Image 1 (cartoon, rainbow, N blue to C red):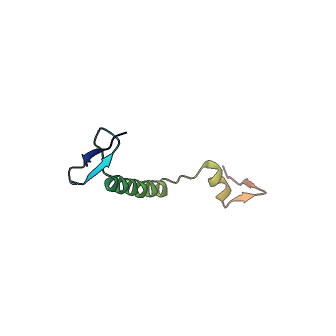
Image 2: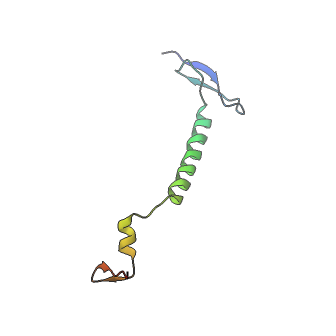
Image 3: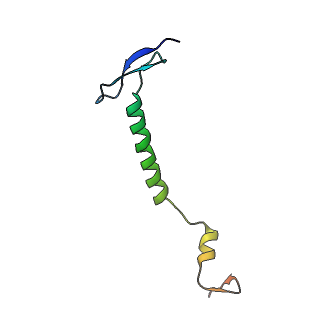
Length: 73
């Protein structure tokens, strides 16, 4: 297969690269930077959206008697 020379499609990047693809895409440096940014965003999203399940809330409850919640009505 023949190699093609392309310019990176990112407007602020002017790197040229070789690829077997006929269409131009992001250069390898921009692709690596995009993946690193996506990993940072995923890590922040996972950290901030941890929600306790009903079972976790029940297990952490302090007012249990004999393993069951003691509730006053």
